[in-house]
Amino acid sequence: MKKIAYFLFTIFSITAYSQQVLPKNERARIVDEILADRFNNLLPGLMDKSDIDLWVVISREYNEDPVLRTMLPATWLNARRRTILLFYRDKTKNNIEKLAVARYNVGENIVSAWDKEKEPDQWKRLMQLISERNPSKIGLNFSKDHNIADGLDKTDYDAFMDNLPKAYHKKVVSAEQLAVRWIETRTEREMVIYNQLVDITHDIIAEAFSEKVITPGVTTTTEVEWWMRQKVTDMGLETWFHPTVDVQRTSEELVDHLYSFSGRPDDMVIRPGDLLHCDFGITYLRLNTDCQELAYVLKPEEKSAPKFLVDGLMAGNKVQDFLTKNMIKGRTGNEILAKALQDAKAEGLRPAIYTHPLGLYGHSAGTTIGMWDAQGGVMKDDGENYPLNPNTVYAIELNTTITIPEWKRDIRIMLEEAGFYGENGFRYVNGRQTELLLIPRVKSHQGN
Image (cartoon, rainbow, N blue to C red):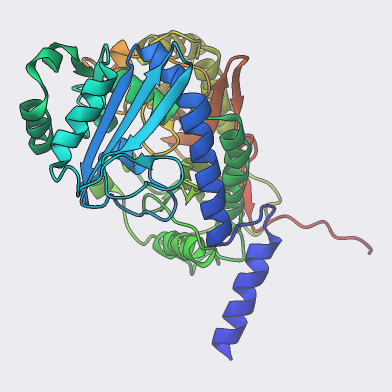
């Protein structure tokens, strides 16, 4: 009987959400449609801007290049044996070839160009294809600054160079700029989906931070974390990191949990008067969210959160505004960080900014706008040399420290929301938190 009740509760919870979660077969169709659009309409322009006319992506099964993982069709969960993809951009004909040096097509987008019976050696067949096209530049995925663009392993790099005719060696270049642009750039259809994805994320947080899940004095932070994890599974979704829920309250010292997982106390009982914070993200249709929101647990006599916490959230929103107004095309992450911190501090705020790209990966490719332990900027990294580009998504992640005389201590207002930077500037993908969630929700009572 309990199992039936739980099943009905789960179905009700899912259908009560504002966005529909598609079944697996429908997701696969959409993933492949988006992939075709990216290959045919996005990739040619990215190759032109990166000045690379031949891009070779190589991976072996279970050791996939992070870029290749984003290029596989929905029914491929891994590369097969050694998978070699070749993208050739012919600007004179305004077309792009998408070939696989593999025994079979890689989905419907990439055509097999290897008949093993005619040429048993996979590397020799790859070199034939390269020689036939005589490219100006051959891009390979190796990079010092961008981990996601550094997916070519040494074994395959050595084999590639050993088989490549000497005349082509000087044409081999890092494809890091192309790889980063491929990972970071969002299409119009992806942004429609992203809005839905963030909406689902907000819905799950709102339910987790409610009396449906939390009974003050009984429920622990760890139980809420596992509820969120289970909720994601029940909805047929995935999460790319384990959720965290933590507490700040008057009787506790400021725990540096933000900067040290080992410093965050586990399994705290949630009590009235607590300020709750969560860090939570999901994966759906190959996109990822990363969100931090705040909730206040009402005391029996309270109908609203204390003014000092309401003001604290407003201070966090101000730091967000200082950051996002400084997100300007062409600026590096370090430049954005320095100006945003300067502006916020000039207003008397005590900010810390550690914003990262978001998209096909949770910690994705693009420019880095600060790290929690690098508030002076990141050196010899993508925040130093890589600019902010349009049609990209960022996790606007930051905090501001505020002093609460009533609690006789400092606390941190920690926030994170998905934001889109486009040709017309910045916008939040699906809004941002401007009011504290309340536990329990305040209900209006009518009548005498």
